[in-house]
Image (tube, rainbow over all chains, first blue to last red; front, side):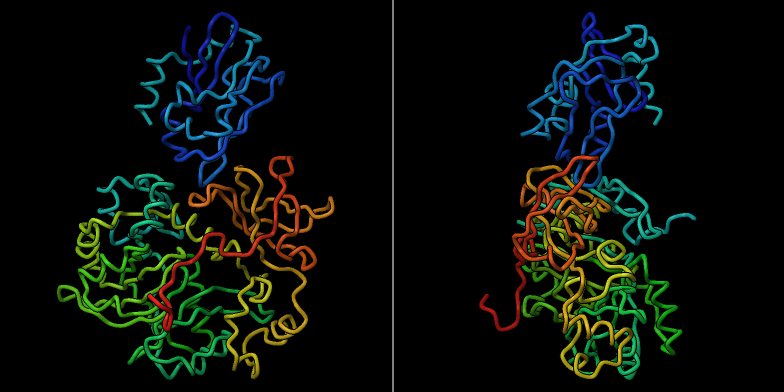
Length: 123
Length: 363
């Protein structure tokens, strides 16, 4: 499994052609207390860089952009009852959705963990 | 334009605040986190820096002229009593909401930060000579333990009742303290000389009951308390009656009129307004925000003016303007968020019960 990151602070963990998408610890810190997450339903076709999920903190709603294109295979049902998982475990149990990648070539446009850490440090 | 700094700016940053631009100031939106600060205020005491708000004074004799701009009874206001009032335009629309207190030597006004300069212009245009006291800072200490913490530092404040105020002294600094606030909790608002603000704030924060609270929780607290926010729930296009603030039209002024837009406001008091500000309890947890459409009978009937997640309630709540026919408590309607319609119910406000210490009420 390999982790990739976007400049919008999403991550995708890739295992073969399947990916799991969430937001980073930096993102959850910026969002503040998450109170609601809207995730795409299974079967939704998503396009890299487009608004695919919405995360709502106490103060605002923010779009989450899919890091890669593909077809959604599962949404994280645990976020319905406990959206604060995005704060407490953003890169684990706070994942948003899983998908089947449409084009593995898109991964080359994303950052690896070291590059993302450097990027966050520059903010 | 560079944001102005609050007197406590350095302290806020030392305390780890996340700072944002608001009303022309760099202000702390949160410290420990909005929900934690919200719950702390509901159970203990939160310290808010609200120095962006405008503190103005007028001569006592300006009471008659001030009544020409708002629907409150100011000439009949007793010394040491606060009155919530509304600056109105000629259509009865709300230009600002404010607190007016009669003191021994002046009238003391607290107005919103974003509107204070327009208010000064408005007052001057009416022939009044307000003094803008930007040498003063304003702190709010709110929550059930605020009285315990403040009484320890400033003996005597516990004797104040809700919407009453008096002068106090703390370590040689003259304070003007009212028992009032914007959270629905018991608490105080403390006007303090700017150069003593940090020392007072440090002394308050040293009390075990007190933690710093930012603008984010201030907004969620006032929303749960059903208190409107100027520029959102109140605008020049909303009247006191539509806004559910008819109590701000004092009895004598109802009889006499003589305030801006009186004909419109008094007619709405008699016949009822065409639309009203109501509270909405949204089914589920999804927040609805300002600008969301309210749907009645499959048609857009109004707009949400404030909304969000109520941390102490654990649910999604909002304020909206809806037609009078849909304003009754219990009315089922919908709110549209990103193309999805969420079911909601009109409910009485406050959403979360208030805990004021009123005169004549048992303690």
